[in-house]
Image 1 (cartoon, helix red, strand yellow):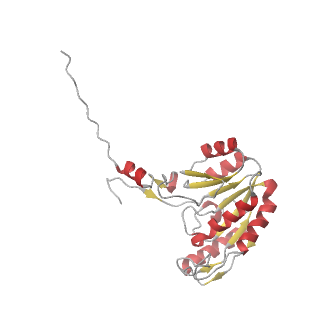
Image 2 (tube, rainbow, N blue to C red):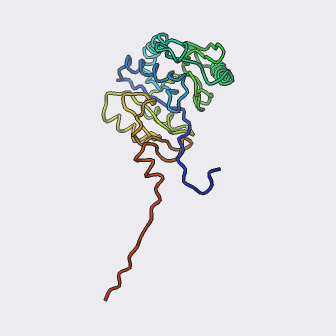
Image 3 (cartoon, rainbow, N blue to C red):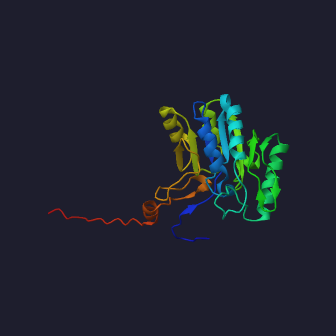
Length: 238
């Protein structure tokens, strides 16, 4: 609909955060709980898919469950509220339908999964199938899914197996691994030892694939919207 004009589009995502076996699990769980459910998960880079190394799935799942249990639902205008409602009841019912679909496909409900009007409890699912909606589509709601992996190559492949590519997070204490993963992920931004849901306004923020065109951030948006003009001088040789 834009016609022949330049556009800069930041679109959706189903952001991945990878928790490697050497990660600080307590910190990772704390940040995944905060960043997975802030704004009731209604942000484009909200933590959605959490790929966790097989060796630490059990302790991480329990730590995340504990951190999520500390979150307080209520009026978002109150300072002690962590989670408010979704934009409307229709969206909340869609979230419930996706939770039910994942469970029917074999996912384990770790916590949450209940609705009250337009509000849905912060929900953690374990091992949903990769083709379930909570994994392969954009949830845009208070659901995170824990998905085990055995090798870092598997985590990279699963992250990239998406029509989206906005932003990703990685928790590891290995610098070489961090570089390897950052270069291999097909996303617009990778945040090391943080979740996918971290950005600053002056960064070149944006995605690839169905996650958008161009980059936000004042300098980078100006560059994207600038038309380059080529001027050529032909100097006669006497």
